[in-house]
Length: 353
Ligand code: CP
Image (tube, rainbow, N blue to C red; front, side, top):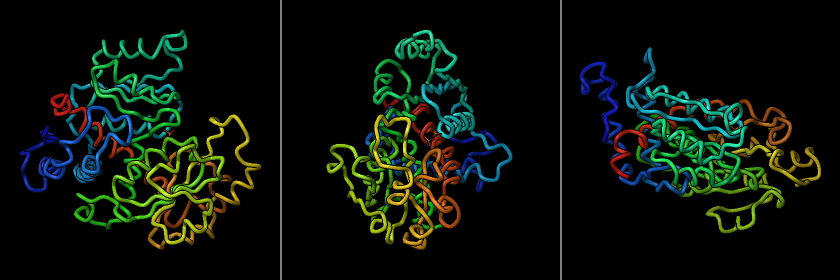
């Protein structure tokens, strides 16, 4: 496996960054063989591959913790393009930071202000990036399936940073990383090599429009967790009964003793009709307030993936305080995306093609 050693001293010196990262290789060997070339959907990852990503993120975090310069030379000379056709705060910034911390050259491409506004197609943009030698393209697009199309046009690795209402696999990975940290114990050795077996995660809200929910259900199921979706019937997709999870309309009952509540934003920008009578009624049925927070297990956590609407999915300071890990999710996003870039874009990825 490609070494993550930093060149700052003997790779195997006890306590050195090199030594810590050698453990990364040892810890991820099993799932490593299973890693896909592209990360387009959570289903691209087997349980072993997902655990390999989470373990690698743990070791990267260990290796750079407390360092004055939090950088590794792993992707030096590689080019990562962030291709964003849709607005993003957390994902775009964290992919940029992750690639820079791995010493890659980073190009940030936003559709606004580019030749896309003159009518250039996704394919032509992709071929331009290919001509410039992009080793990896991180793409967010409002059209479900755009990353799949891109993967057919470019030679490098494609990573889906959110496509329409379809998938957001790195969000699911960072959520699983956060869950593992809180639910499996404080020591790295308690977490490495493990999934989330028998843990109960309740995902609440606008499932219909949520790529985060889709990716989380798939990944959490692969990691052995039990997932319950809670939403008004109008915000559940057709065919949800075939997903590997339960569905409930009773939030109080679902939250009782749960290990985590994942609150989804109501995506008004994707709605073309009335999905519930009023915001107040939505919050009454599906918002997290202090009474409902108390129903979650004492060790349980409250999560939220994107920009939150405090008066809708959260009420009465339900987003803050005990058990809220919302800002921690953002921090973990950088580490997990470093692991994804390292595993898929380092030389080993090319060998697998
Ligand atoms: N979680 C997430 O996708 O957030 P952004 O839309 O800010 O990237």
